[in-house]
Length: 362
Image (cartoon, rainbow, N blue to C red):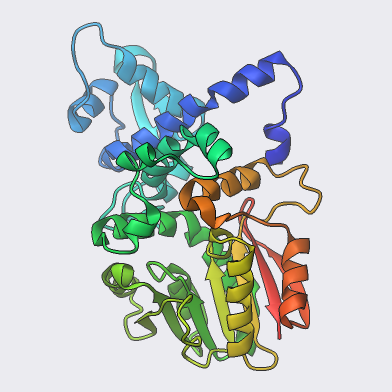
């Protein structure tokens, strides 16, 4: 479906493709401004553009109509609903916005205290990075000047706890739905213990712990995200169920915990081939016979002909990790790697949108 929507067949499609960033910028800006949460306070009667401008601190000069254009753009893509026309028109959240974009909603795409989560991360990090795509393609990494606008990810997880927390909260919003589906669709009932490597805020671990109360669960990541993970796990009511542990999976130390399921949620694509294989070998060595390694990523179709979103994510890895030569991958590639490091069989589990779980069994 997505690959068909994004296919170019003529000049109008070309122009549309080139301009779509304006729509995504408006959506991300709405999340960043807190529009959807502000509208939730006007759930019964709705709010006019003038009321919302006052709530959000938008320009209210005479003759200024960009606020209405901004709101009506969000109506046109299905994020808002509008009753009436002109200055008296009243806006409300559409169901999808109420569910995913209102702070405190059942599937809010951000973790407290960051408003907007992944949408803000896309706005403030991913979008500026893509301005450097041309030099990154030419040089193999973003130029040094780019890091004056976007913090180097290696610095984030080395010393900048606040930036690491912002990144972790954004990834929670991006991954929550997929991790909930994984908890439903993978047969965790056959296993006893989960270790989530590179677990960030602990979102995946919490999803599994809530649904499979028999399992012991731990989330592992670097020290800069430890406090954010503890807060998230506690907020999910999983403080007694999910252990938050520090672990560098590239250290010489073996994977701790004696788990029979290990997960890499949006992690394997962060690295080049050598480090991908290193992680898979470490997982294989740590798992018992019959244990499972699960890699959750935006897997590219094997023919590499119908995966614009996934291949865009792979370019995002170039921008994030530079000379690491990080990339997203196909299930065929995952299968070859799993066989190479000693796994016995593989399977693929569909999650939400373009995301899938590639599973290797020892």
